[in-house]
Length: 125
Image 1 (cartoon, rainbow, N blue to C red):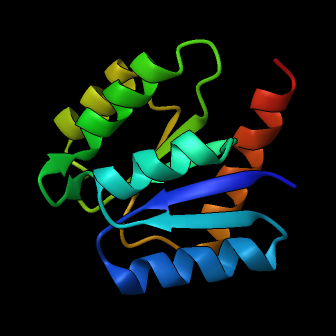
Image 2 (image 1 turned 90 degrees about the vertical axis):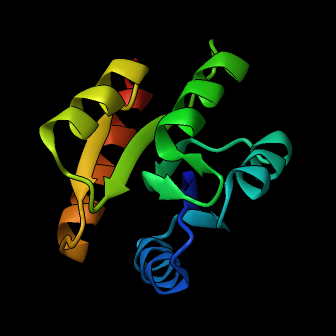
């Protein structure tokens, strides 16, 4: 099964996402900031990253950019999960290379569907 890193400074949101995805059989790692996220990505090959836009000392956009720079040929699939759902935020995310954008609040069934769909699409490339 796929390995997913979730990056969110909201512990409750992290817990909910991890619980839902683990129940679906995914291996889930969690980070609450950029430092923890890149420590995990250096150690574990993640198939997907779920990243919030608003994080301590950095933004989700900066994390997307860094991931794309550090792993240009083996980039994990990226879904932005954020309450910042303004058109500019969504467009900026896609411009930097995000594969999908999920607005908070979201239903857990929508999360599972988007994760599965994107992982399936990436696996067939």
